[in-house]
Length: 315
Length: 315
Image (tube, rainbow over all chains, first blue to last red; front, side, top):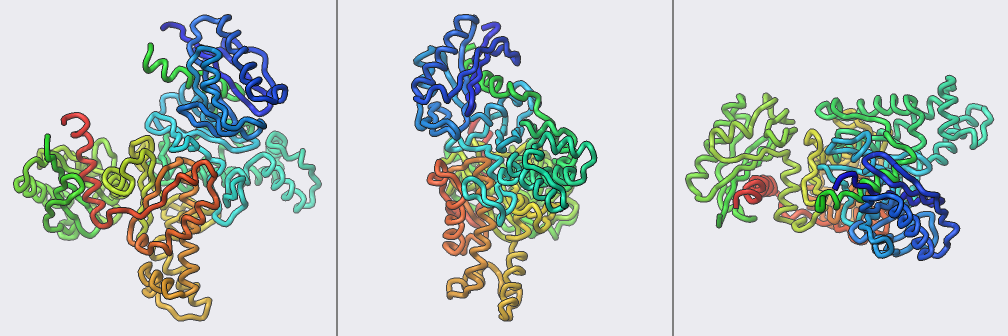
């Protein structure tokens, strides 16, 4: 089929975005939906299906739907076990429900995997058989590609880079997991730690002065404490990434999310730390690059995922 | 082909063992070869090929060779980049050389992967699509199965569980990698740490009293320091295994190597620590079991690997 299109749905905790995708272009969007306006899941599903059906009538050759959600999904059945920030979304058969209401094959995936799929199928990791993608923001999420396939694992919970441990006797993560990377590098934790550094140096700083954006600005203006904060961020991140390299030997690491906008402040020390602790045979081949897509990764990744089965079996 | 057989070669730093394998049975072996007797690699290769050709004449239906080596191998070409404890073995085309001398298709693999393949194809992880296998001894080695395939990675160096970090500011590993698991759990390091604990408690102990065997005996006799040592061993090991679970979501973890003989002294606290720091959806499904094979894993795994291509394409 020529000019095949799919619909990508980026189901976030606060808003749900829709895009009609052709190749790597979002050729149309429709107005967002806000989960808080639909406290009953079945009402929200109906609203999502309406948007999809509208887009389907407006665009020809739409053959599939992909939906990325902030939570834990049973991938083959598309059943959502639960969503982190959307009350009531427990044990919801989203794939089945959307397929019944739209007559389009639907794939439902974890949002971090969707981002990884966007980068792997269309973006910075395109053409690589072994890739690790992560997003750095409020939380730390990730997705892993190995042997040209998404690594989902036995219960489809693989790729949780934010929960990996960087210190067996360290700070507790969300699952009572000592040394969880996210417990150091989540935006709030990074801000609080850096504020403490300022206070310890006798400098008065609000927590709101310690966002990644403002700390990047401060570092660029030569602030030693901010520079040290970015170095520490990179050191901790390098630990999880080095561990991931020892386990999986990827060719490329793709880093997205708001924090990646810090650019060289993050990437330079990160590469230095990674290079120092990896072995010759693979460290020289390893690429560490910024993500190609930012806010559109969710729509693009789910739209690409939607076409997987279609392209394999029907075209 | 019925009753198909392959030859597994377990190429260790001190000796090389040979077995003719049918299914999971080693039906014949031949005398070991000692690398120190053949300082020139081509002489050692010739000796290996002679053993293989002898076994081939003694047994019918031998269709392939597998060889596991202690070092870094380019898997598709079977070229050994270097071996850890065998001088002169740098850039050796072992697959090509053995194929030319024996006329049998040959697979050359890292020894830890070979052990993992033995457990996955024939042993404790048989039938599992997502498995992590590790060996605990002088070093800590591992192999990873995901989506029913060995994860080798871009330069075939994946599965190095012993090099993963459990502390970003920790003890240096062999590659200048902070917090390397092996730097805590290698037999020598475990002995030295436990000896220090004895000394700190005013108890005189030789390093040679702190082998895993003797520490297991001491713990079974109620020695508090030995019990604490095993608990600490399990805590550190659980950190790498939990990280591996967050990244890969395996169904089963198989633990072999000499240290695994400690049995419940290791497995009980290990399961306790793992269970405490993993998330509900998958921790309840995770199995942690001892390896089925010990000294034979190398021969069985390489023999099984040898048949992979054969069974897929020719039978």
